[in-house]
Length: 232
Length: 89
Image (cartoon, rainbow over all chains, first blue to last red):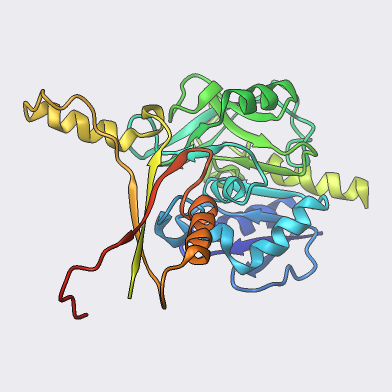
């Protein structure tokens, strides 16, 4: 099982995503934005960071990168694609996911361990969770406010395509407390919080058991591996 | 060389936290006459050659697809910048 992680100029969390993939039991494959080659991977992660310095709009210039032509085509033919933070912004800019991300309503960057509710445990990336399960993973962004038109919001909610929702507090003004969504097929998922930062005891969020012991994020990666094994 | 200006604005105040932050600063300076600020983007695109209808159509398409994101922004203006007389650069 090989999962590609695309590095763009200004990506930050590509190494962490690769590490999460390895810990989950798959082989991470480093991909470069300037190539037209997915190197035969089975799934893709667009990592967090500040591609192109967030110039123009977050994720906008990266969404026009050479490799995105292959990413869009693979996503449309069913390959699992996960966009984390800046990767989520790229997926909206590439029209693989609906809506958009704008500057946090309070105007500040925010970094915290964020409680989320998994609303849809049927996507390729959330199959290992139980619907309604609450998890905690890090959140760190300046432009994480999810917005969409009223009709788009209604459709996302009605079709169960809100994948994760903020619980306890809304950290950025996202409409309907939306933290992550999927496409219709459920193979493309984007979320602002960072599952790849909560995958190994000692380095994750604090839990009631022990400091930094939270590993809720690993399930995103084990879920896609299990999904691909089933469909293989 | 001629320059085409493209102006992009956030769709609504809801989508413009930056404008609201600037408006807040004006309020703190006692500038109560100015009740709101909206903050957008201006692109200046230099064209190799002359600007004809085909170029303007192409810029309009780029404005809609690259320079703005129609989910959150509107293209509010596209016009050709008149070069000041005697400009040499």
